[in-house]
Amino acid sequence: MKSLRFLALALVMLVLAAGTALASDIEQYKTNVQSALTKDKITSMMEVAKLLKQYGASYQQPLTSDTALAGKLKPGEALRVMIGMYQFDAVYAAAYGRKKDAVGFLEARARLVDKMNLRGRLDVSALFPQKLDTLLKNPDGATFDDIVQAYAENAAKYEEMMNDQVGFETIEASLYGFVLEGLYVTSNSLLTSGMDPELMQVVGHVVPLIQPALSLYESFTSVEHYAMYVDPDNFLERTERAAWLKIIMKMIIDKKAKLTEKQVKAIVEIVSKERAAIYSTMP
Image 1: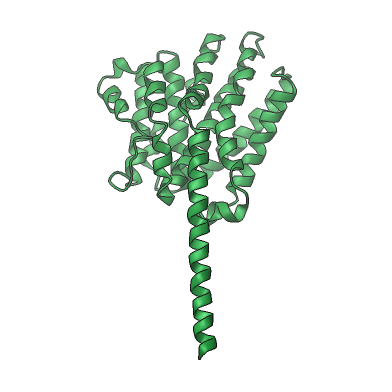
Image 2: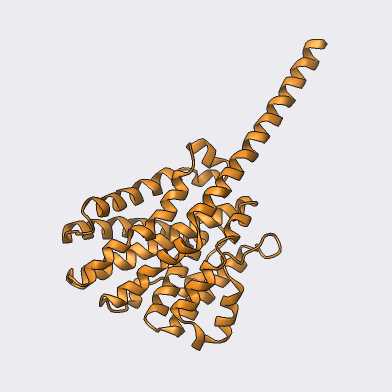
């Protein structure tokens, strides 16, 4: 009888110890999120859209995501990734003064956030700052700087969203979607420009686009830890997504941003495949 009581006590202690370790991990990962998504880093991520225009690229709407998809998506990984993809499309359109397009992407993004039924469950202002509501009501005010500022000023809210598993999954997936769409638009713009030397300067600014997402993925010490925070069907994302992002970033750094057409085509192929994988899961 004593042995049974001892065994029960030991099991309780193990559960409590595991809970304490998990809580400690969560706090550490919340700190990592705060470090990866500072106001300055968010601003730097979004800057690449403005630099495309500055260095002479034309606005290419066919490279952006169809806003009609927002009405078809159901809650899940594809929806979370699309939140970030629409976010990039919005700043991309705003950088070119395409205010109607920018507002259209923001509206699509808002519909996705609403579909997740997060309002009331946790603070979604990191995903959709209140300032954006004003821009939706006044499309003429949807400038690039206003949109970037709205997101950057809410950087601290990302840490709060980590208190909920769905919040964490949404941060991770939407950040990935932003980077994916940014790389897709940027690399395709380079190719269609004929590798214009002036536009090639934007390559040096792709690293700040990738780094926050890569830092977040690399903050996990193991796949097992990561699996505690995400949908079991998606726990391999960390290694798979981090792997190809790291390859692209390392190539840019090693080549000092002086990429050949063949290397840019390789990036286009990778991001097109990853983007297609997201679309393939949609209804």
